[in-house]
Length: 572
Image (tube, rainbow, N blue to C red; front, side, top):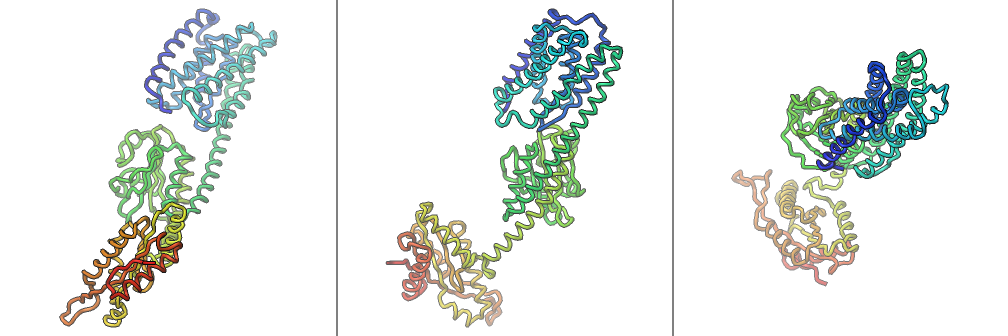
């Protein structure tokens, strides 16, 4: 959901009306005990350390500070706990490097934790609890402290669900992996708050902060490493699966589209670009995706060593930038001004850089080093998959093309005709016209000028027909000196007009025999003609074979027998 300026202003207004006033009221109603401010400083330092070490699960920071706030609350009351919590939230958001566009998160989180502290603290007092009580002498405080901790976590969770579902209108799973992690770690660390409070009341005093803080820091690091290793394993599994999917694609364009799509799904990518190395001279942009939309890849070519992509190409090593300050001195060329994080990876095949992948995001520190490793692996899969797809396409094209003219061959044409006829029978096509062309007296051309000259005429005729037909139909060499043209959704009258234009295109302009000379040493010009038959389905044929047969009948009976060099239509 895009946050509107009005909503951001509303958050600031709500914070201004609630938090400063609320803290002042709490100070008046529940004033802190008589103490020196230096007594609180060690707790503030501990909370600052905890706030600066959040675990990030599914891009959601887990704030394991409830156990410290419990000890502060039981010792100094709601006012001190509320103030220290506000400072801790500020430290957390600064640690997460909130961008200017998300600055509203400061008042939003401040307001949320103010409400959490207020509700859980007032509930504690309403049940008869009070701060500074020795737990050994009054075990009931354990119960009240537990109620305080549960209500603290519960209100926090409900507030987050409200923000996700109602304010931000986020869809999907609300109780996912990040929720499970936060719940488990909160209840694991919650008893530490009681231990810290009890040790602090004892003769240990502030030394208790060291005895409790150091083990917690170790636990936090262990949990972070555990989650990070699990995340890397998941990335590796995804990379392997994506590699298999890429290998299954038989078209280079499909491989490219799938590759970029999977990267965008897996990483926080706003912009994705793929550049191709052209003749080992320059990088040409061949694929461009911005905010999930595929755009026309228009950009000036980049030289080796120029720009981020050129540096990746020259160095043959990935590059990772966490903010714009790190790469602003480099001419990026096509990366938008709003981008912050950039990840560039060379696409290598046979130890040669054949392309460069560039991923960018508007958020600072959007990519991690572990993700760089995964993308590097995926680029290797991508390079192999593209090469295999191109080999398959080349082999398939060679099997479908006439080696002499470069036009489609008989086998391809029959498959295409069958497919188009199926569309006709399903109502996806209304008409299907077919033009069959045969060169008149072509044997005499071969006998007079030789088969090589005959081949030259076939090549030139194929080129003339290709330019004339363009994309309006499918052109193929049907065999020998015969050519066929399939015209979907073209009426018979229009097909006859086109056939007549083709006949004139052949008859009115001589063909040049490049490898034959006349007596004066000039290239020979040969005039030929062609006979053409036209048939249209469904009026002339009920199946594909009948359409070819009837066009062939029109060609030989209507055109050849009538004197050649003419167009004839099939007549029942």
